[in-house]
Structures are given as structure tokens and as C-alpha cells.
Image 1 (cartoon, rainbow, N blue to C red):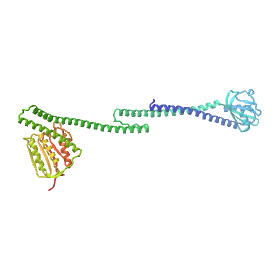
Image 2: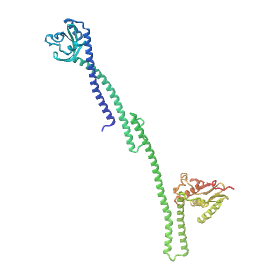
Image 3: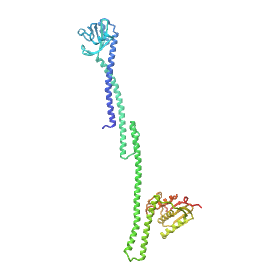
Image 4: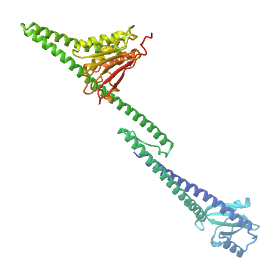
Length: 459
């Protein structure tokens, strides 16, 4: 199958050829017709100008010589008296010739016929005189020759015109081929997922221009969709990795206490005469690890409830210092030998007590886990703060540390499942508050704080 520009060239050549044949035929037809009419008119003018009324051979010879036509004089009976090209004595009676018969009826008699005398096709014009007929004639070939000269001139003009048309056609054909190739290259690039294409210079025709604009629009949309897909794929990979890390972390965190429980229980079972003091110690270890598992399950359950918005706030008025004090007492009991410094004023708040207590426990327990020095709890009428002097948090992690399941490299928040600060942030947002984190990974130390404006009770 031919390409578009090849079809255009082939069709152009067919049109030129057809135009050539038609032009030549029409030109020859009208040239022949016009030359025949011109010859008839010219011979009529010759006969009009002729002043002979009687036979004058010299005059007839001079007339034939000057005009270049065949001159014949015929008497009224049809006998040929003189002919400039043939012997009159050898010629037949002409009274029945068509041009003679017509000349009897009107000013001029005309006919185009074959001459048996000269063996040629001639054009005749005759005029009736007083004592006979004067006839002039030219060969049809002379008319054809003149027509051919005209056709030759038309042919030269047509050839020049065709050359111009072929020149411009070749230019258009080259532009079509060039633009078609550009469109083909663009489509090939799109098939290879390369959408950075430009077709602004495709202008050989309106259709190509519209096609190129639509291709560029499609390419732009596909490019945008690919970027969206890449972002989505990247996020999906991050989520998948995070979920894998979460499952790994949860598995690890559950595995250790479960293994400890199984180990201690197996020891008690396999040693019936185990010392009571040692047995009590193992039972306490089993209980501690069971509580650890329970706390992790509670944390996961709480995060799910918060995310599903299935927890309603149970607001009540209470003293924030009481929560800080109970948090200090509970965690000092749990973390023996650790110091929690309480610097809290009496501040009345209207909030969900259990949830805010969960906030303080999470923040203080994290501080105890990741610093070896004392932890400070500060409360005043403006804000609450938990301050530690631990390793600190890198700035790139601070922006994401409140995300669900996010785990800082080298640090595992809330038993390594990345839920503690997510829960804290979510609870505070339910109360219209915002968790602020300030930390320095170089110097160490972190401050976790929130303003009390939305929950503080005035007075």
C-alpha cells in the first residue's frame, strides 16, 4: 500500500496526464474549427475583392499567386475554363459541385470535400459571376498545419504550467511526507512511553495540524497520568515496605514476650520442686510479658478506633496536674530507679480525662525509654510539656514521626510499632490541639508540647 505522499504524487501525475490529453484534444478541435472558419472568411474576402466579370487569365494567375490559394474559373454551364493547379481541359464538369450549387442560391457557396483531381481534402468557396463562377480553395492540410501551430503554442504553455504544478506539487508532497514522518515518529515515541513530543511545526494541511494537536494533547495526558502512576507506585511501595516493617515489628515485639511466657511456664511445669521464691519470680515475669502483649493489643485497637472515628469524647472538667501526678506515680513504679520531675501548676481543663491521660503516659514513657536522665513534666495555664535529655530526633524525621506506623531509623517508638505519637497526635486533634515537637539530634534532648487554649477552663 502506498504512503499518503506517494498517493498524492501518483494522483497528481494522473491528473496532469488527463489534463494534458483533454487540453490537447480540445485545443486541436477548437484550433481546427477556428482556422477553418478563418480560411472560409479569408477566401470570402478574396472573392469579394475580386473585380473580374469576364474571363481574364492573367488576372486569375496573379490572384492565385498573390493569395496563395487555388483559383478556378467555371462558366455558367459548369465547364472549367481555368484552374491554377491543374489543366482545365482534363477536369470534369463542375455544375453539380456542392459549392457551385450553393453559390447559385446565395452570395457564397462553401464545401469541404475530397478533390479527386488533386487527391486531397480541400475547403472550397465559390461566388457566382455574370458569366460563370469564380472559385477559390485551400487544402485541409494547410488548415491542420495552422491548427497544429496553435496547438504547439498551447502545448508549450501547458508544459510550463505543468512544470510549475509539478514543482509546487513536489514541495507539497515533500511537506506531506515530512509531516507524516513526524507524526509517525511521535506515535512511535508514545508506544515506547516517551511522551515528550512536539508537533507544533506540522502545518502541511489543516487535517494534519488537527491530528498533531490531538496527539500532543493525548501525550500530555499520558505523561501526566504516568507521573501520577509513578507517584502512586512510589507511595504504594512505601506503604508496602512500611506494612512489611510493621508486621515484622509487631511479630518481633509479640514474639519476645510470648517466648518468655512459654519459657517461664515450661520451666515451672517441668520443675515441680522449684523454689517458691523463684516460682513467684517466674510468675511475675509471665504476668509482666502478658501485660506487655495486652498493652500492644490495646494500642493497636485504640489506633483503629481513632482512625474509624468510633470513639466519642467524654468531656469533663478536671485538674491537669492530677493527670501529670498519676502518670508520674504509675511510670516511676514501672521504671524503677528513674526520676520524673513534676513542675505543674493547678490548671482546670474541660476534656476527655482518659484520653489526655493516655497522651501523658505515651509521651513520658517514650522519654523514659530513650533517655537515661530525668524526665520533666511541665504544666501551666498556657501549655503542657514533656522534656527529655535523650538522643534527640533528626529534623527529617520530625516532619513524619507523627504518621501511623512511622519508625525512625535506630529508634522504635512505642514498642517498635510506631503508634505512640500517632495516637497522641490524633487525640490532641480531637480536642482541637496540636502536638509540637522540638529536638536536636546533635546536642540531644527533645520537647513534646501542646497549647491548652481549646480545653482550658478560665477562672
